[in-house]
Amino acid sequence: MFTVGLTGGIGSGKSTVADLFAEQGVPVIDTDVIARELTAPDSEVLITIQDAFGDAVMREDGSLDRAQLRRRVFADPAARHMLEAILHPRIRQAVVQALAGLHAPYALIVIPLLVETGAYAEILHRVLVVDCSEDMQITRVMARNDLSRAEVKDILAAQAGRAVRLAAADDVIENTGPPEGLRDRVHALHTQYMMQAAAASP
Image 1 (tube, rainbow, N blue to C red):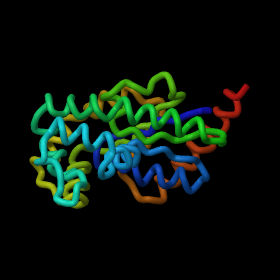
Image 2: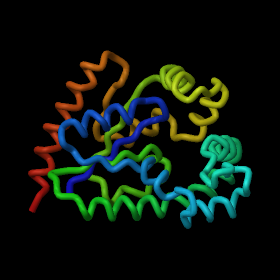
Image 3: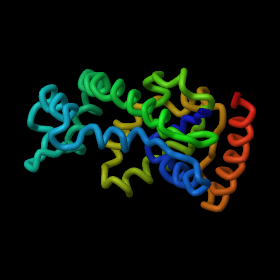
């Protein structure tokens, strides 16, 4: 199946773009959703995370305290690498399994850390980057997640830089203007990907 990897920095608008592709009938596989499913209460992955990070990242109801874990891993690169070693191979395996069950001209895979992990190159035909300025990212994330500017900047520092993401892109969506322009750009790319998928099919 023809596959498009969708990525971008935090607050760039990946979810909005993914929703617009879904409106076109494109199946969307979201690695953040997979990560949440993998870390459901009593899951093997959550038990592994608890063993690695302790009870401080757990809520009283047995669920993962995502805010606490996020603060921990973005403050400590070693902790972040440990979490990635637990999650990323399992997420990738789930993506491959999800693709195997799809029947569509192409699929969109939302991978926030696509550039950072480098784990999806062999299953992606195109990389689509949603881009905006760092100031815009900070403003959006502060409003959306109730985080301080310093906390958002720590998250940005842990992600690949804007230039690195753009260098890895086959296609770019500039998410800086009105919603109508975003919808038009998605429609144009959808038409392009349908053609490319048809050309690539045996």
